[in-house]
Length: 357
Image (cartoon, rainbow, N blue to C red; front, top):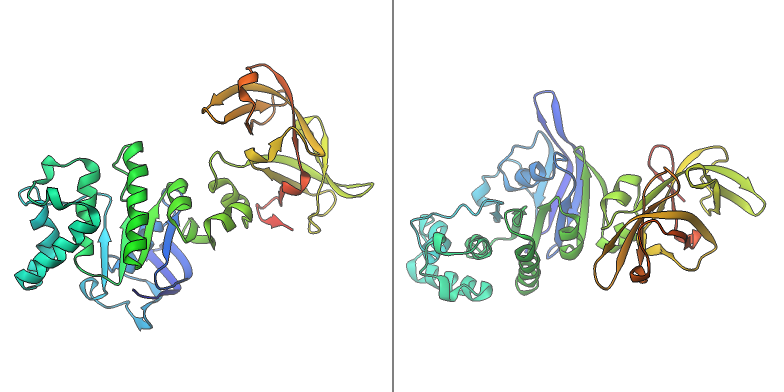
């Protein structure tokens, strides 16, 4: 287990800056997920921690020791890649113990460590098989086992589930969460899948364009996003965004929604200046049959998922709105509905995408 810190870390390739000054503290035993769209710099940042990419400027410390120039093999880190990278001619047992044999670890200790890892990952019956005899999920468990036997301070996972089908991804998420609980070690995990981030992380680091947009627990980011990007990225289905204009109403500030029949709703954001253009964010589950604000909509499509239904609706030719409803069986395409919501559940963002409070 280990504490890791990044201080003003930057990475440039010539004049092109990929990581633009990251400050981050990762506590011992935390499960931290780097999440963001493709090209945001999350994998580059992970590779810098691993020592596979040089740090252009700033400091990386583990347990207070500066690691910028320390060889990757001496950082106490083990990495699991998107590709399983197993040796096809070796058995599961041999693949898991290869790094230890290369390091000159005694045979008896190798057998002990491989046995312990196999027990944790339920790989015992597979130890004498070759990779071609394994499923994708089993191969990924072997790759994780290869990391476990090294007894690292920190585990790094670089999109390890990307090659698996949907059912296996769910199963492996559970396996990785169980592994973290059992080993109680620090894990840094990279993914573009915000569902993985929400279900696995103690702490999520949301990145965009080489910058950290927000850091927090999954529910903190979901309930209290700092900006429009985080609000739209975290949550599935995504948050609805409605364009509006701030006005002075009889009971305080309100927002008029031109694309929704000039409907108005009161807002509590004191930073919203009258006359300014804002974006209102409302999550699908915040719509219902009650609430002091409402939108008159027409259903375009219904997505039935059994216990719940998502209605995709709009006002005229305006923006599509996603509504979660428990009464979807009684609805059909073309129906007119009044989507009610509590204005207190609506978030307000300025023209630049920053949260107004």
